[in-house]
Length: 210
Image 1: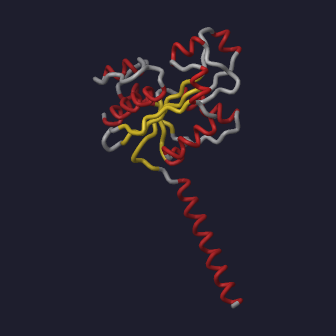
Image 2 (image 1 turned 90 degrees about the vertical axis):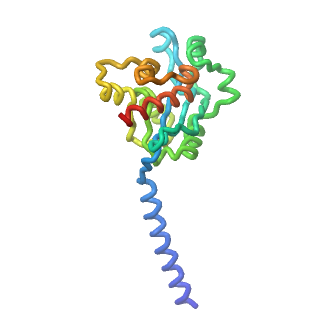
Image 3 (image 1 turned 180 degrees about the vertical axis):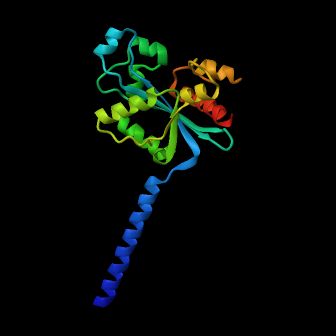
């Protein structure tokens, strides 16, 4: 009986080791069938003086998935986030349509929003993209300052830079004009996180196909 128990524990021990190896391999696995495209809206102010006196915080993360084989865009969604130290200014409201009241009702913490995004979009295992470096940079900065785990991988695609390189532009013209250049129209509202992410995904697909 004792020998049987010892053998059982050895088998269980080996299984645990194998499971650890499998989990480790899953953690470094990258899925290339889809790209996550994001767009971030943050608290902002009209003047430089106001901007210097206040701290920018993420208030919306728009997300969608671009299917590389077909160009189809799925799971378009906005995640609203309650700021901790700043407020939505009238300038920010006019730009994004977001109000402090909306964030209090529909918003959650950045940490909870990122956990939901990671769970729904498998952020840990996919390349992600955005139009410009702002989205990646503010996400990294805020996660660091608030000691929050950033679920996104380091391999980020800057759609603005990719478009300039592929279409030989000296200077970026902006998402709306660049969509027009490739015969596409902007769908939805500008400075809406989900709509901006969706349209950036359209632009990215055209760039990758060219």
